[in-house]
Image: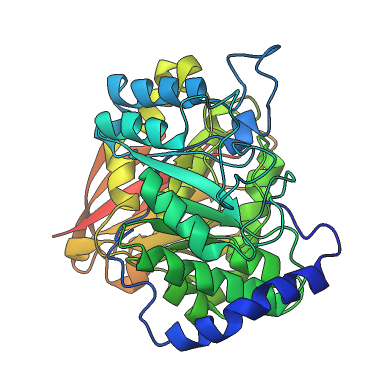
Length: 420
């Protein structure tokens, strides 16, 4: 969530020493043989929209509380989110009490979660959903609540006992890179040893990268998805920065993604305040192309029908969730236009054409059909369907033809090419 804070190197190293011998003894276990996240995780996560609001007296409808999550669970079922594939309801930072209990276990804030996390998990499960929770590899969470350092086994078992289905594991307050890496590995093993299926969401490369190049072979071996870049904000500048970072680093990260392990560019902020309609279309289209976890952070009580239709668009979700499990990439950038593509099952391809220009009106862009899908998507021909911003069947295209699109400023046209 946040970059390193505090000077806890020595504390981190001392706290991990008792675990070192145990850790070395279990490294040969195949840590991430958990069968989870075969397609990118879909759900809802509170952080970007609700952050660390703990003032339930002044803001009872937007503070981090069991009431908020129960309301979101109800809406995920009644408003079609669950049926669209959004399965995980995820708690981020600020759910904890300031101290552990007498047995060293994490506990929820008693005022804001009076029934406890296990009760909330039971409620979420009764709706056919799954519950995610947050903890930190260091001595404290990013917001200053108790960290898991020195308590990995206890916390993993606590989460399993509560019925947790996903753990987002942050990386604040641990300055030692060795402790950071070993902590992420150890918690992966600890979760698996509980016997409960728990998706493991890491921020390991985000905290590693400022100091050394992440080892994505290790990261994929231990994590189901992983954050590489800064927190998303409710702003177009933030979305652009994430996309720029991704295109700059795609040779390093694209090939490591696949069933069971995904690059995570952070939450969908569609339905909030900072993006125009075309920019919301761009985020949805490119997150689908990138095979990113689709974790919304918005207020499902205040979603327009237009935004709901975008987030629940079954054709776009199908691209994101395609069982081939390949992350897409940007293969062309010219004249303020980017062209991205993603291979799909059954020899199909998804193509996104993004207009980088933020002045003027819609722009036309023409591309050779023979250049799409590594030259094979439409050889000898394909059916082209525009999915976003509106669905439109464009018809049959031979390999020798050109395809013309028209894209709004800061917008994206998303296409599907089905081989025939």
